[in-house]
Image: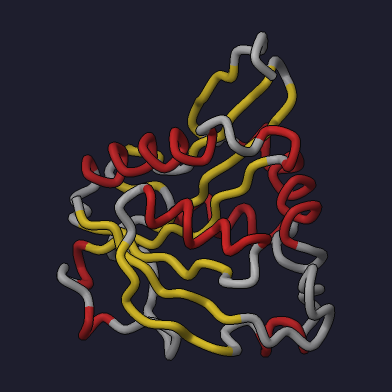
Amino acid sequence: MQDRKITYQELTEPYYEAVVALGTLVHGNGYLDEKNIVEWAQKGQKNGVNSDFIALDGETLVGFRLCYSPGQWQTDQWCSPELWKSAQSQTAYFKCNTVDANYRGYGIGSRLLKLSIEALKKQGAKAGVSHLWRQSPGNSAVKYFSKCGGELVKDHPGKWHQDSLEGYDCPICSFNCHCVAAEMAIYF
């Protein structure tokens, strides 16, 4: 990895298939598919600015970051806007950050997050929230997000349970997920 040069660019349609493949490999079957990648990518577009980015090693996709632009997503029972330090209308959602296992630990996820934050600022965001997977190996998801400035808002046990009953194959719990989601925010 040391001698390879990772390049970054905005996510565009020709990379959707590779994003779905990497997302399935990392997050499990049923998390990302051909239909929701289109929907999710559209939510990252606002005022002519794209907040979704990919990382490439040559022509190979090795990471991606998907975001929902401020005002282009709805909170649900797993969100706590009353605890946020930002107005809901100025808060983006960090939907997904994924890096191939062979490329972790080299700052790719952090770089993707920084690129998205810069784009989200141009869209009018003052913050971004996310739900991090507490059961990630070594709690790496929460550790990474905290290192990037993320603050814990609230833990949500069972956030992905209904998804698992509808076909999401959690890498730990299979089709009966009871993993905990850490709702976290980064303010900018």
